[in-house]
Length: 275
Image (cartoon, rainbow, N blue to C red; front, side, top):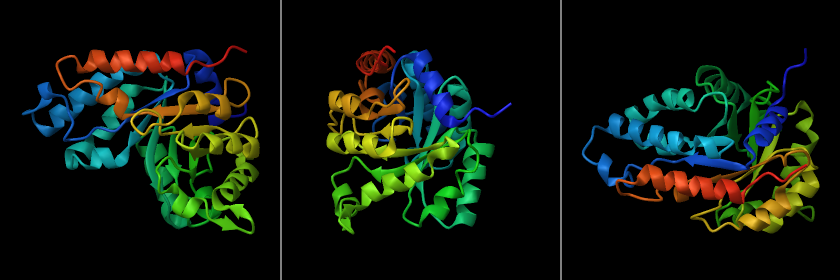
């Protein structure tokens, strides 16, 4: 029996959960809620992340863990990652945001660590070293690989919008993703802060290649435009990430309730359209 591809699993979960919401787990040692101050680092981090997952799991389709945020907590942060992956469970997609980019041998080691040892369903990668580096982590059709194309930060224009043979680099990247998407597990990262880029991305990639869309919330991305421009066929082939707006909705005793309320609000605003 053929193995379910990452794109197929994403479609199933989008239909089941009914929302494009991806919750970004970006814990910040300087922004943890006041009730967690004074606790041991490992305990404070675990309580915070577990509380956020508990509060938001009914409202989302995926979680995206920002590796740098966990590294900022030191050894305790690194050690917490496997427990977070288990806490989320297989009923939601688990994406590691590390933007890896290296030679194929090293990328193969990343794939082994991220997918086999840590249990993530997808990861983000940089294509700067060429397509051979992307191919090295994209061998398993069941594991997703989101390739950076047009990111959400203002500096994205510095290189990504430079022209090569009359075409912006980021559009060339989209074409490369499209040409290699037949395995069913390649997607693109395109920021919500550039809604016109999402429309171009969907046109170039076609209807089935998944988009991971950061930048909604504190970065000011346009949610309505992202939904209008980025949805593909089926359940939409798109995840829209929100991190800080959910995680730090409150710094008081009600931090879990505030996170739940914001995730619920966004989940409804990001509802998957009816077939």
